[in-house]
Length: 86
Image (tube, rainbow, N blue to C red; front, side, top):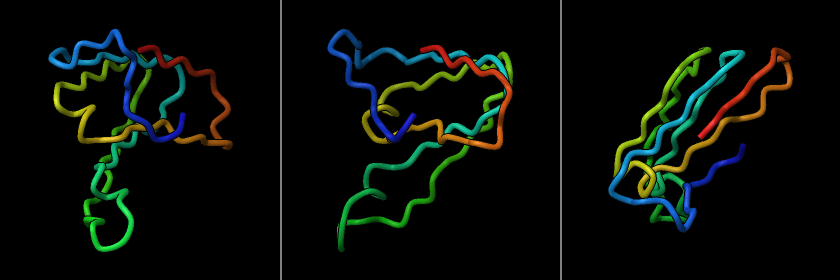
């Protein structure tokens, strides 16, 4: 799942977004929106990487989804089953 911010019309921006992870451990990457800007507006903000283990619950409180893009990078060497449910 590539870098994105959740923007479904039925999301309540004042409520947290909860995600559950089942199966093989995978990294969940948060990248600040200002670190994605081109040229001199780009800020040097390191990504945050969270290891999602089997049975993990990830809670993104507001305004996380507005400020940070998130992704589950593809890992071709990880062959175990995986389910990530929002």
